[in-house]
Image 1 (cartoon, rainbow over the protein chains, first blue to last red):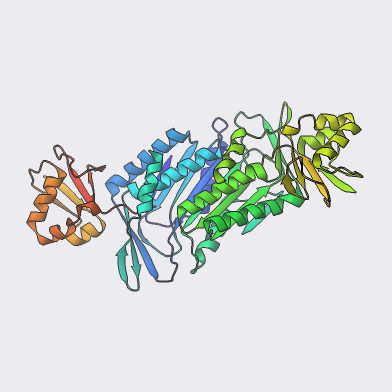
Image 2: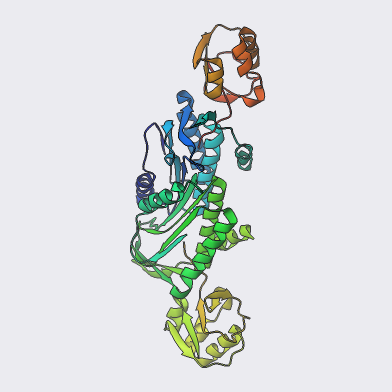
Length: 152
Length: 152
Length: 82
Length: 82
């Protein structure tokens, strides 16, 4: 399990390759299925200057590690990776990524979706969009909260 | 939409980065969510010498393009990528990858799972495992066939 | 003339990847019956039809599919891609 | 002494990221009532409790959670990570 919180940018492709090499090289627990999710700062109408992400340092790491622990046990993962940035992010930049590896694809997909649902609504991050018109805190979406129900 | 069938190896991380850059750069249809799946030749007990993948060239491309078309329309994808190898593959090598991009993660995940389910059981590929003990055609799994039911 | 193509263990059992046949078979099932009657290796390959899949002109169909106007029939085991 | 930390627009409305308070509040809700009574900016930040989330010692809890033994209380809007 790797959980990384960082201000600096990361290379999602390089992280995916490193993760895959680690989880598939083990002869004992070789995983055949690797799923990744990458979230990117979106700017659909060319207004966004930057996104700012605030977090709760004392809580963020432990909260994410607990989610990853749960997913690893629940779906028998061969490995899991979470990278999440905070601070100021430029449009088009990766915000975060999740990768999961398992013997079969259904487990890798389910674990990645579980981690995304919980990272969205239960990890202490808050996004603010800074545009030419001003700054706005991104509102939580009702369907993100509802997405959690399928895991209970 | 990109569909590639090839004998040679590919770099999943580099493909993911290229795909992400394309689908997220558009200001009109910028995607915030990118999901990837990579399937790797597994060798859990160190017996596998190589995997051989046979396919039906006249059918493979059109069949996969039809799946990708359907997924793109069904989930409003900003982009989709399928790469699948054939021929002789070494243990640990990527067999294939799928990447999907959408505005929201639920669509990107659903489309990637749909494409994987159909690639597994409806695209004309056949895997043969060559081990020290001989060669065996991989049997289709009942749960792969059942996985298709959720999309009807 | 109808093209028939075989893949995976169907190809191995029959011993060739493709052949052309002259046939008046109305359906895929009729064609299979003709092939089985022809030689032992076909009988072996088509022994359990439930373990096989068929495509006509690169579209998956059932064994009751008509052959009128068809140019290529493919026989193979269930696919194992991905 | 109890540490209170604020995030996102809660922090902006109250005007500080953290503070230490001397309190005998038994629950989070009691603490919120004390803060609201203290100054207008707290009343504004806590006006709609349903729009807020709270963690005690870095664990998400309800507003009825007891404060006995707690070292840090955090108030923030619903999370928007990922």
